[in-house]
Image (cartoon, rainbow, N blue to C red; front, side, top):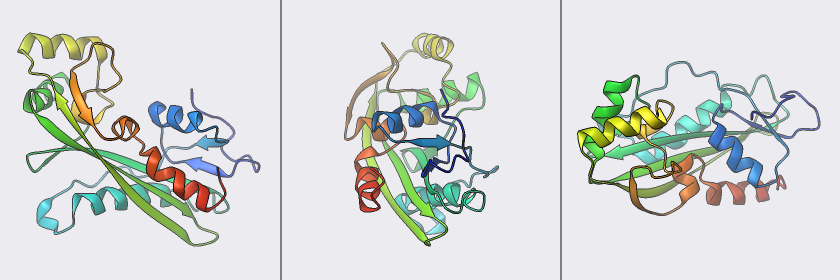
Length: 201
């Protein structure tokens, strides 16, 4: 459930996200935080032709999400995050419908792809803007069309990059390497040092 009282003076940390999975991961740390959706309406699409690495792209987007609400909360530390699924030089975001979800899962079926999660910690008052990125690998099971259809109907993965959730019971992930939390949507191992640096944890 989304934390409330976003402008409570006693809350130092704002999460610029509406993701319940990110709420859950921050809550596990015991943080006193609130959550406010970021104000980026049209998220940019990654292109290798831009000359920017995917790591820098996802970190910049995480920072942009945090900065999009910094004027409303100039005294608070704001956490921004963004997660990308990357395979065969292509980024897979959240599917818009059943057909797109099916096509994405077909593309990933039986293969290993990369997960990048960028994080940012921003504080307008002090000028702080720190970023980092986590990388994990995920292999999807080899799936039939019927298995893909049944998975989508059961889990409705329309709010998840790559059209799947690693946390889904009896889901479609065969195995993974790296941080589970990074795949879930927040690279906690990268965030903790930043929170400690500014005595937020």
